[in-house]
Image (tube, rainbow, N blue to C red):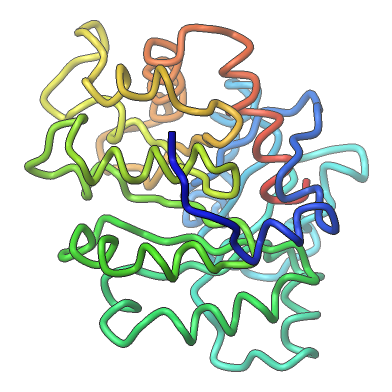
Amino acid sequence: DLSYGLARGDALAAEHPAITSPVAVTSRTDCDFDPDIWERGDTHALAVSGISRVVLNRLPSTTPSLSPQTHHAGGGIAWRAVIAAPERTDDDTLDTLHANGVRGLRFDIASVTSTGLDPVLKLADRIVRYGWHIELNVATLGAYRALSKAEWSLMQFPVAVCFSGLSGFRHGRRADDADIGFLLGMMRLGRYWLRLTRDDLTPAQLKLWDEPSSLAAALAGARKDRLIWGSGKQAAGDGSGHISASLAVLERCIPHPADRAAILIDNPTALYDF
């Protein structure tokens, strides 16, 4: 059992239940859809896979057909965005970003911990009222050292924190490595999330019909209500089967339908305010 003590976010959970309490809906979500494909309007693969909501890693070009509220208006695909921290963080800027679909800010943990997490913590205090979260990319060089240094600071975040880039983080490590265990242990606390992709779950040299990766076995005991899934950037040779292949890997690694429903439907609703 993990004993980290109270953190500032615990007192805020009751005020912002959408961050910690999944809400049942009927729409699958791709939490890391390629924004270049989105802007080309090539969403056929989403419809075929039963996905009606996407999360982009930047704001798309502003056009009437690309509205965050499209799905809720009765048609099309709804979207949200998690973006790099904006240069300006005044109230008017944050209000506009929220209205335009932003629901989180993204940082590379190795770069932010080189100077300490205090600036990110201060910004996190500013975004509590919007129900946003912080995404920390752990795929960058030096992330494993940065995490060990930042453990106390990570406990102080007043908003949800989502880790991404696990396939890069795992380079040269086994799924039962202490650093992987640290991330899974943070998830057990309830305010920390993990975004999965096909590369995270299946090493590149394995084919779809091979046994799931050792990480998939490690996830068997993880909190399924704190996992989300994204198809990721589409490689040149992937074609239209990229999303369906990614979902097939998820199904192999997370075999229980109720767990997959949480990952694809309920959890994104809570984290991204769909």
